[in-house]
Length: 134
Image (cartoon, rainbow, N blue to C red; front, side, top):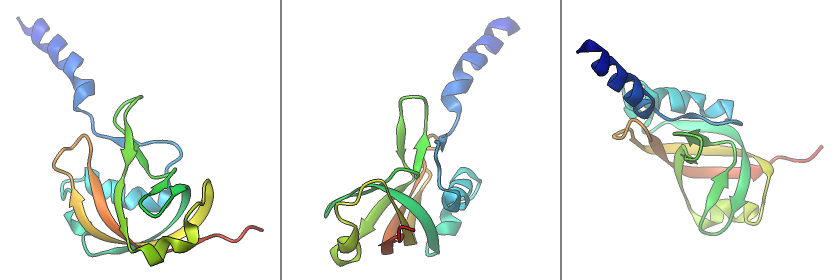
């Protein structure tokens, strides 16, 4: 009777794993990922500021998406590690930018690790500026 139990566990094991950073993933966000996947469930992040060098995938008056801030649940399912909020005047200079490196200053305002397979933070973009091309 033991063998069927082991087989069921082995079949279910891949479904239990948590999201992992997808390539490319910004090294500046690795402490955020580590805190979300640890036992504190990200609560230690709330109220902290973070500076990161990210790549803008898309920036509009409503959305800012970074191409190097994704977590992957499986081969098909990816999502941003952060739910980004901002004041319109803060992102005004990057609207329309695509595939552009930028310096970002974030304030972590919340952490949601209730679903261990898809944890994320809520963060306000305090400042963002495009890196100068050399």
